[in-house]
Amino acid sequence: MIHARCDFFSESLQLSTSMTVLLPQPAEGQIGMVGTTADAPPPVLYLLHGMSDDDTIWMRRTSIERYAAELGLAVVMPTVQRSFYNDEAFGRAYWTFVADELPTLIQRSFNVSHDPADTFVAGLSMGGFGAFKLALNRPRQFGAAASLSGALDIAEPHFWADRDHTERTRIWGTDPLNATANDLVHLVANANSAALPPLYLTCGTEDFLFEQNQTFAAAAHHNHVNLTVDYRPGAHEWSYWDATIQDVLAWLPLRNRP
Image 1 (cartoon, rainbow, N blue to C red):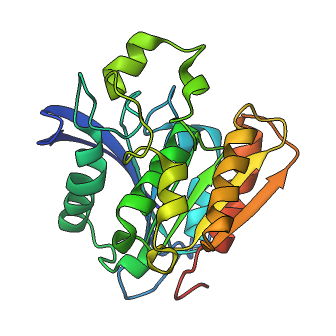
Image 2: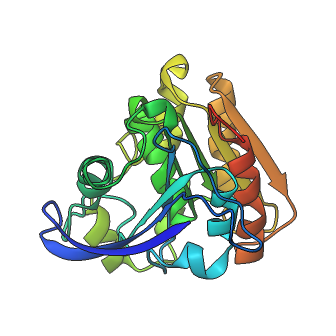
């Protein structure tokens, strides 16, 4: 795999930022690795980080490079700070960045597929929220979306009860989040289920976000959304995510799976 750490200026953020990009390449002479020789541009996975991390974390905590290499899959990992993938009320336009500017930048800069059927998004914790927010608000952009231990019910009033209200105000303002573009339970309950891409939800049964995931799954199933649910023993930690990202990759509807 080609491993590129990219520094660039974002127009929507009005600042310089970074992303990590993995691109498939032939690797016949590389010991212990599998490469790809496909002529077509590869499918691409936007892989999103959690609230305390950045674009390097998936590389540092998992073997995502090795997993993606076996599939001929490009992986794009942006940095969005502690934004919850939102156009912050008192901050930066991170939703505009990740939903609009970043895909355009990737398509202009790298030889990856532009077809929505070859474009996927996944993330953990805050990134799981971001992945499903993208899929529910921009369903035509993605062929599938996955959430690993996602914060999927942030509109629930008690979610912010024990958290920093200054941060809540910075991200969302002071208005309720119910029935907004950030209320994922409301969105999945009222979506045109036939228009959504397939969704994959995994969460550990010992995770503090487990009940939120159950709430989201119940709303999705009631609306007959194509949602795969994987609950298993585990907490909010990296050994769980390193294991489950492999299951997500196995689930992705890759059209030319090796």
